[in-house]
Amino acid sequence: MLDEVQCGIGRTGKWFAHQWAGIQPDVMPLAKGLGSGVPVGAIVCGPRAANVLQPGNHGTTFGGNPLAMRAGIETLTIMEEDKLLDNAAQIGEALRSAFQREFEGLAGFVEIRGQGLMIGIELDRPCGELLLRAAEAGLMISVTADRVIRLLPPLIISRPEADQIVAILAPLVKDFLASTPQP
Image 1 (spheres, rainbow, N blue to C red):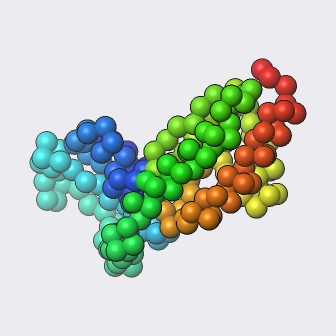
Image 2 (cartoon, rainbow, N blue to C red; image 1 turned 180 degrees about the vertical axis):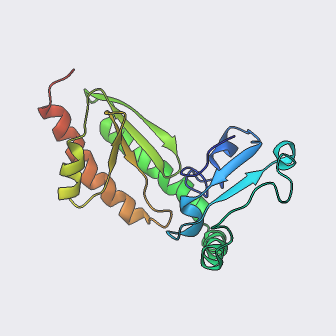
């Protein structure tokens, strides 16, 4: 089973994150991006898992909601028409490259990683206080594992908006690293 709830539906620049590794899952749960904010989820099964549940073995009290299904269909249609997977791949690469240039050789910077618009900037120290600093500057970020700034911009992000993220976040990180003791 490969969980694509957060990283699937174009987030990484391909329909599913596992496609970057050439893996074929037996079971793949999907949600979040599938409905563009409307709660919807799906389970996709490959041939090995498809026969585990037979008709009537499992039911749902919430499945097949017409609004959610329509949101899912429209989301996928718009993603294809607007080439949002290409956008995620291109803008994600631009963001990672820009941050790499900004932070290369900077004491406290460990690495930048990710694919498409799922980006992590790892520092050598806890950086939770950057949440408030970024919010005060008009940018929403998250911090995971105490030391990783996580960026998940929307798939519709434009290049000028991506440049604005770098213009806001890079100085905040540099100031934070300069003013916070090393571990």
